[in-house]
Length: 397
Image 1 (cartoon, rainbow, N blue to C red):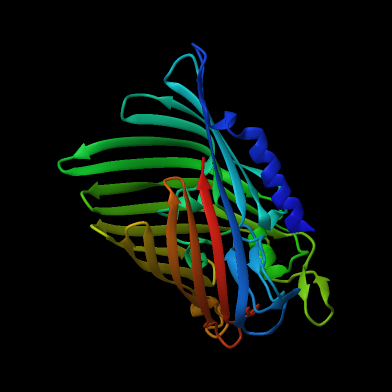
Image 2: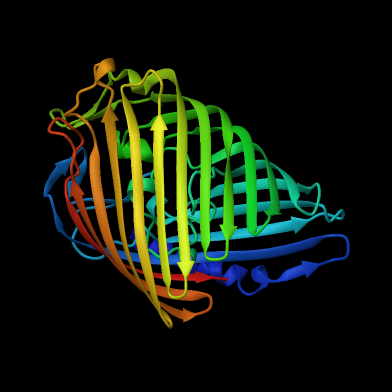
């Protein structure tokens, strides 16, 4: 029932927006440009660790932690986790230095409901510098700005070990500047703001699908800078904030098969601090693309730290691409704070993707993921190993 309804929603929205939505209009004093993107994804669980994890029947593969996108042990094709539709519009005000950008995305993991991802105004101070105010993507990673646009990615879904976090957007202000330093193109961005994620999809993965957990990131400060020269690019980012995580209705208990109040101080609204560091490297030369990303999160006063990374290689063959990627996540116990060294989360995923470009605006991808659970003996919830085959059709318009 869900797949029929969501596919129908995509079809009806497509009829309504195409071709008019993708046209640019200039009505004299005002301008408008619209665009969109679509991914229809299907996945089939090939195997893995069988059993119940919280209120899910596994084997399970978490394709997107932030959006609670999970392939589980059901038989047959599953279309929800990687299917999405996005619409974006940019309105230019009578003064061409001003514009407003909005983007909404409907996801299969959220039953096709549209969420507002971007809504911000831009004021162009100079040809190289812009001030933006509103709701934007938090620029943690290399693909953060385009992470919903399947056509921009070499995979059917982003490597979840690196890209899956409880907050992906923020509301605030940022200043962008582009320049050239000798033979290097430089793009810099500084930002400040906050975010409130009600009923976080991320925490449903850890607390149960019927649980409700609210997340606040306040006093967000940070920025990112990208250096590009010929075929080489590197990107550095730093974000800091205070965080508060409040579980509202309990966490899943296997013994009672129900939600029970949590005693975890991390989920009871205590305010903590965090510092997030990321580095990305990309070498795009001839028919080869080598890329890597690295993340470290330090939470002073907490009993664990986060480490995540990915490394990938892509080879192009005309209209074809082949990509091998390996991504890894592990939490580091701070034993001086009483953390259990055997109670830490850890997993690694290896993926192989074949991509064929149907047109300059569309492609089809086939991807195999093999994930190994390397969590400590006392880690829970343990989703275990998983083997997943996914097929995706991407289009931009």
